[in-house]
Amino acid sequence: MEAFHGQMAMAKELGLPPVFHIRDAHDQAASILKDHMGVHGVVHCFTGNAKEADRYLELGHAISFSGIVTFKKAKDIQEAALNVPLDRILVETDSPYLAPVPKRGKRNEPSYVAHTGQFIAKLRGMAPEELAEITRANTKRVFRFPEAN
Image 1: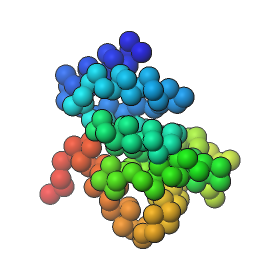
Image 2 (image 1 turned 180 degrees about the horizontal axis):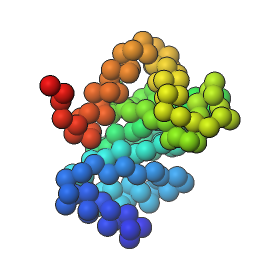
Image 3 (image 1 turned 180 degrees about the vertical axis):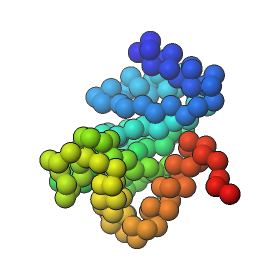
């Protein structure tokens, strides 16, 4: 917990968005993040429920979904993916782990992120291309990528 505080302080000092993976510690993480308001990062490989996602969103963070969201029993994560505002949603591979359905059980790779995006788009009733454009724009904004000339 001390190291997490230190990393958040460093993110603020450097003006960089932290990326953090929270697993089975959402209450503790939210408590620490409250101490570092104004630092906006990404909850990487989100594994919580909609209520937990809402807490991170209220604190200014984006939520990134990995292939876990495509798993049959991941109903809580799917509910969160359905409710995260479009301007705060990201997708990722978490390669080499957690390959999405239909690649589950295989070594994950970056190209599989399309399956995760397609799943979330279908869940939300939108075209995969639309979600891809939204998540691309969100990634550029969150990580402050310069616009291409």
